[in-house]
Length: 343
Ligand code: GLO
Ligand code: MG
View 1 (cartoon, rainbow, N blue to C red):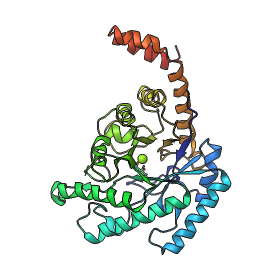
View 2: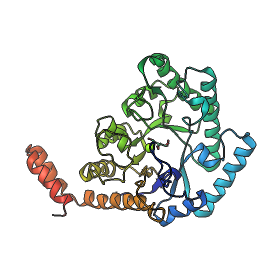
View 3: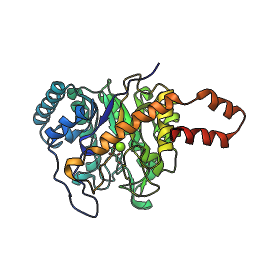
View 4: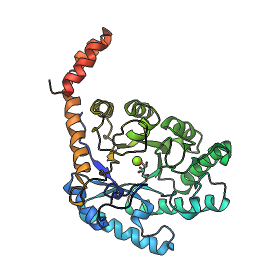
């Protein structure tokens, strides 16, 4: 049974090109303008941070509630679906040194309350998926926090959220570094280990981002396979990454087309998407793009994904099996490369 894929991205994937060493290089599209790009580019799902939905996560709840209802209306009018809501716990003055694992009890309390509000927001925009990207849940230097207490605090956060709303599920998006030097939960495996300790492991799964796996020195398709086997791959952030440096969020497949092919292979052959999972693309336009062309990375990633689906579907699987059983991996190399080269 082949899957008809649905695609999603977040408003941060159309951006003004600023980086840690330079200011904005393009005027930002307004949120309303960004929303119009979704269908034009072939996307149905919108990924949200809490404060992408509401104008400020620190506003009184009545204001946040009305912002969220307005957003729901905008989505419904355009036939768009909210894929997830992620509490943006890493930009607030209180969470400079982390939110869930901060040493400050005040910061930790803020993180819990804000995360509960993010859940309330998710219910209004129409999704039960809560993404946790634990951006600052780690350290800049080893002695800054108690590592055991930090792990306990992460489990506690999961439990409080699972208890707060029995319909939601939590998708951990793990990344080994950046902005922190070292994250406490650098990989999917770390997160799923903790998931099993929560009050409801069946509602804790993962979102795997290609670049994050690469930054951990791992192969994204194997990471995805690990989660797929456990029926815990509930979303992906496909993109590409040129080696171990900052998180580049390059268009899917532009650095290593074979690595991208293998991700599509593992997704396609294991029924990813058949339970409504989205193909999320967490890609950024290069700083050098002009504003008028600063959505092409989304168009390109979408197209590259679909072309790779065709290649996965047309691969001679009998031949692959034959070469596996005869252990002729040189010939298997050639089969794959020939296939990718259109030969
Ligand atoms: C950064 C992450 C980030 C998350 C987003 C959703 O490295 O990939 O973009 O995907 O904040 O939680
Ligand atoms: Mg991501």
